Each structure stands twice: as structure tokens, then as C-alpha cells.
Length: 186
Image 1 (cartoon, rainbow, N blue to C red):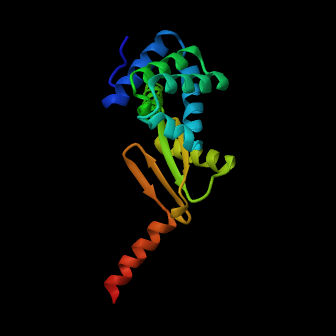
Image 2 (tube, rainbow, N blue to C red):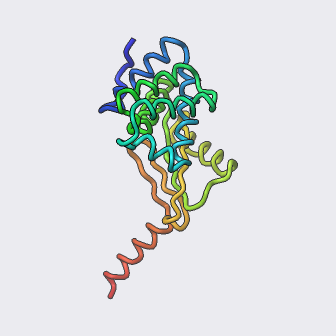
Image 3 (cartoon, rainbow, N blue to C red):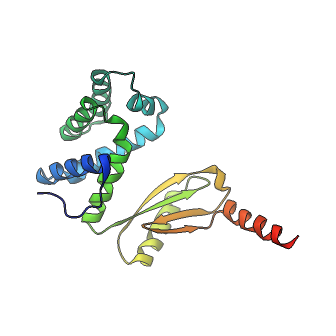
């Protein structure tokens, strides 16, 4: 059964929708989501893995073997391993981070959840993340998943993206506004 209006478009959207439909048919939505979150973390933390999935020099077979071994060691489900094998065979591993984002967005949409992307100057503690998630949940009136990122250029504060809304309370942005205001004075 095809997913209802997922909003997933492009190459990543088509692959994410296919994986979602397959996982849904097999009752494996959560295990696949967990595998993909783990894989996203590994990609985010390893420059070598990022290069491997994007490299046109590495053969399909080598990419497939590398990603398969990595996922097997991580304890990923057979469905996730086969899916990434198909991506490698089709030379589409470069789209994996976008496919993961699209899959998780489709899953959240199915469950009526929203995803908030929170960027801070320093890593947030578990308590801070829980407080922020609770505040966002009360604000939107539904479940909110928080994806935390770190950008030292913010200097302090937060940038929160929730759907089409963005709240920028970063120190960097406040300083830019102050600079613009000062130019107007002098």
C-alpha cells in the first residue's frame, strides 16, 4: 500500500517512500527507523564514511560490502542491510542522509508528530533537550521530536526550526541586528 501524501519528493523521497512502504508491509517501521537513526549518527561522526558514500571512485561492490559490514556490525535489520545494498548497487549511497531524513519525516507524519531541528552553540544536556521538547510539545499541541545540532558560530542561544517556522534567538543574530541598527544611527 502506497503512503498517503507524504510530501517526499525527488530521488531521496522516492527511495524513502519505497523503504517506508516495505517496512510498513513487514511491520518493521520502528526497527528500520532505529537502524536509520544509528546510520545517520555514524555518517555524521565519520568523515571517512561520508567520503565513502559520496565517492565515485569506489566501486559499487566495494561500497556495498563496506556499508553491509558496517550495518551488520551495528546490528541492523536484514531489511535495512538489503536496502542499503540496493542503494550501493544503484550508485545512490550519496543520497543516504537525505533518504534517512525523508523516511523519518514520513514516519513522523504518519504518527502525527512534528520534528524540530534545534541548533545550539554548545551541545545541549539531556535535561535541556527534555525541557525544550516539552515546551515545543505544549506550543504545538502534539508530539515533537527534537533533532539537535551544534554550530559554534551561533556563539550562544538557539535556532529552532519547526515545520515552516523558525525561531532564531542566537547571539550571533542578535549581534548582526545590533550592527545594522548602529549603522543607521551614525
